[in-house]
Length: 489
Image 1 (cartoon, rainbow, N blue to C red):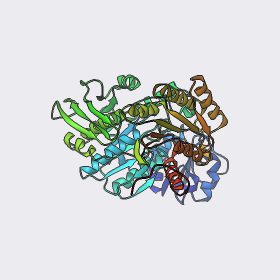
Image 2 (cartoon, rainbow, N blue to C red):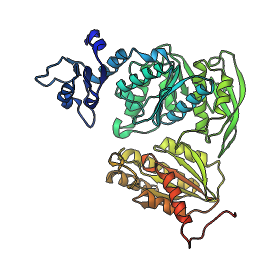
Image 3 (cartoon, rainbow, N blue to C red):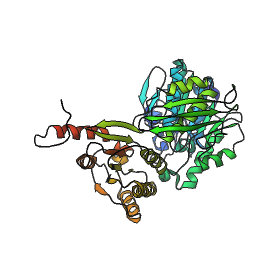
Image 4 (cartoon, rainbow, N blue to C red):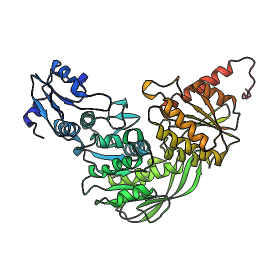
């Protein structure tokens, strides 16, 4: 990149959002999927931009320097890293990618670090934690300029250890370029984001590029039980630390001895290539349910160990880890057990139902919100997966478009709804459909009794599910003629 270092030093900021341009900013014009930053160059100039960087022929009559580069996204990452002084080099930074488990693993790592008295940071799907401040997240992996700014703020807040979710989209868009990782984690791979990547092979190819973000000496922690992860790891030339629930010869493995609604326990086995103390076994206990969460814990424990945390301290910390919002959250309402989960692809749906097999209940009712604006392909795959589980567990199934609870960017399209319903019909699944989430949850509540298990599944369309369900119950309590289970006072 031929942008003078003196210009970067002179700049007041780096941004790809023309609305954030201030006098002295370098504006990087990126041609995105929904908007072309090149059309906002004149706006950036009017707001006092110092220079413009673009990978397209610049418009005429630009009164400030314009730098033409081969790839504007890569240029943004490099400019931002240089402007903010490569803050990731000053951190123990762990990058986590995979289809599912990224959020849970990063939160587990944050919990371990904090339990050990460390000042820690986190960047991911749910929130951004910068040491002294937290913000709701808008993107799993922010744009490169925002990401580098967050990391610099972490260092200013004396953060020493941090974890970041690295999405396939973020990898393709070069958002995580120029980061220095202490280690990388590959959790699992299953179909997702097919609307962006086009097809499953392209999605896997995007995930494989995560390995290129690691230096040759950076350890890669891999879920050995996932065949695609094994295949990707086989091509990695750096150190590989494998984790497994099936093979006790992995660097970190676990034998689960108890699995239920309120967590799990078992024996963790570790090998010398993960822990300097040699091989051994230790008991573990988790408060969050599901085999998949044990797998997540193995990845977090391995990464924490590589970051200097004693193995015993990591295991002890996870005994008090209580989970993440809408990730296998279990609660009770009017004698009913409710599970709320952001199950949004076949892999995460499988993880939920695999957990349900270990729970005790009278009757099972499932409410699923179709995934809006993510394409027919993923919705057809989700519906096929749900139908398969219905044949195994025989649950009452309610499907909703949740039109009352999502914005325009998450509204279910006619094509998505058709793909979902056609897949259910092909698999001969029985279900009831509602347009609104309110109606779906009212049906679910009316159809359940104490002792039943009610499962709320879906991404944005189910985000308000728990709140609406509680309002439904509150309304029922105020109905004078409604008869239902009440505790004896």
